[in-house]
Length: 442
Image (cartoon, rainbow, N blue to C red; front, top):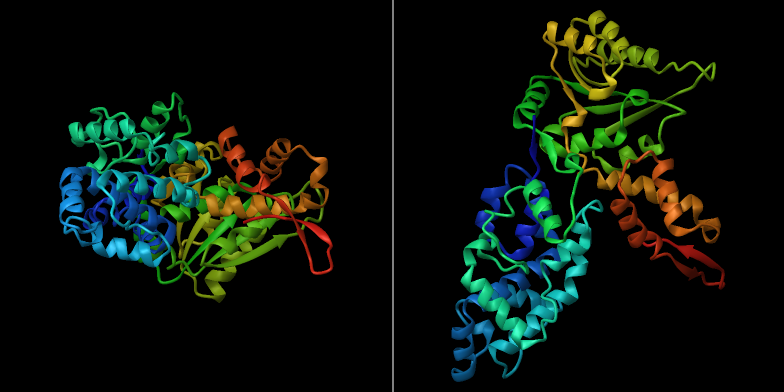
């Protein structure tokens, strides 16, 4: 059994202006690092403060207009606006206050500022979700039209309880509960709003707290622990997704990751250490005969060396190969936790592990929606290989080839998002001598 993630709704809640104390009560447990990242991100904070201003302005429109008109004041001196937020925006190049203007002028001005700055939050969302759908929640179409502004104001005030945490977004409100309850609920409603359907549940489904707690208990009860990976029988993107789904404080207790790799595996293993903070020992296992891999023998030798030479007492073993039962049963003094891929692992090894009281879980239980950093690093590295001959390729065909070369599974939406973000933005760059080369924006 798996549960919904909350990363997308945490980001949305931050951007639309949900109160900080409520944000922390909602998301401190599920995604504390993301919340901290959002609070440190300038672009996210710009949109957050602008959305808060817009919501407060809509809730206090008549009162604000009266004060601006008759009291000869401005919004940065009105108690119901957060003056610290306004000051922060002004200090960061976003001019909010206007001279001698009415509430309607401010409504137009703030909506324009949101429309002008929302694209800078594109990178806060993964490539597998359609950015245009997200963006539409922030921008009122034809917001310069006074009648449209009035309609949105009336709709918001009449159906306030249908808006998430009483914060304004652009949508047709319906009584479907809190649309920012979980990523699964939000994504499905978001796609329905755009007459579309999202069918990859693995992106927003992750392991239950029970599974995570068992892993944390294993780590916490270990004096020294090493994560051992049979790269032939493991998926690097699922491994990275698993690590990203776990509490970083717990993950950092792992002494190192040992990768036992074969020449025929994906290049993704070469980039894992670039996107994680754990020490990685990458062991390339040569073949004596092309048809015979020696990875399993090197894994066994490596585990015995760590146990007897470096006093490692606990191992997290990533492999779906039943041959490793020989390793586990030959080292009864060590503690093992085994992670497998469900469809690659036979029932016999699962039964043997359970019979001996060795905890095992499936990498497939963890969300695949959190491995963007690794996928992006691998794809961009692969793209750079094609730059010298780039003009001989069709851009969209090249993207599909990149995903195939790197063995990254993705739907057409994710691939086209990569195409729009990176390939369409490639430009010519001249050095000091005037030599031209292709420049990849990352």
